[in-house]
Amino acid sequence: MALTRPGPAGPGSGVGPAGGGCWQLHAVLPRSRANGPGARFTVWLQGCSLGCPGCFNPTTHPAGAEPVPVRETVAAALAERPGIDGVTLTGGEPLQQPAAVAEFCAAIRAAGDLGIIVLTGYDRAEIEADPARSAAVADADLVIAGRYERRRHLGSGLRGSTNKACWARTGRYRPADLAAVPETEIVIGVDGEVTVTGMAAAPALRRTLAAGRPR
Image 1: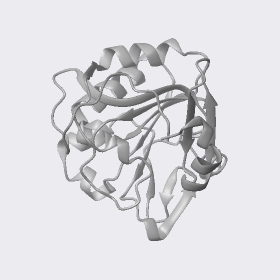
Image 2: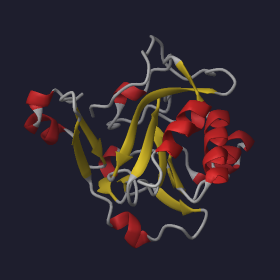
Image 3: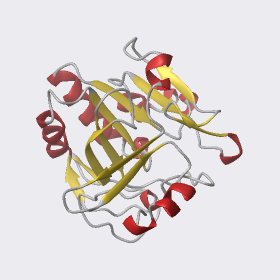
């Protein structure tokens, strides 16, 4: 998937702390319709050590991106109002930067009525067993939880594979809302950069868009 990075990524693997009040980001898409119901401010975090075979976003796995203040991302998201319905956090693995995710979600929740969705490779039991992960999703309306399993690929309704669970923490989102989310989205920026995102399997689409060099 071709995504615009907010800062240069450094070498390394696994995830380390990005510093107080900061997080490591892979990309931000101010308005997306393929990452949750309605138009959404979507944030891809950088760094994931779960190593799910066949992951859609392998370029988000290495840690080491330049730390970005969480407050800057909050301000950018709120600046998109009233044109967005909510925010989505994905990755990478958001819950490997739990303090930053908790800070971001709390600020979004306090600022108004934007919906919050978190996509994670951890399952609900793993989240509830860890205080930091639990705090990270405390303000989320919906958590899509569980490892991606390539043999059980689904690629719709925000679920990459059929084992992934929709953990509704509020009544904001219904199954029908998720079913209506487009499986793929292609955005062409003013500079000609092609952004491909969504839950559909990527290889065939990448070949179709070879001229745009999606990555």
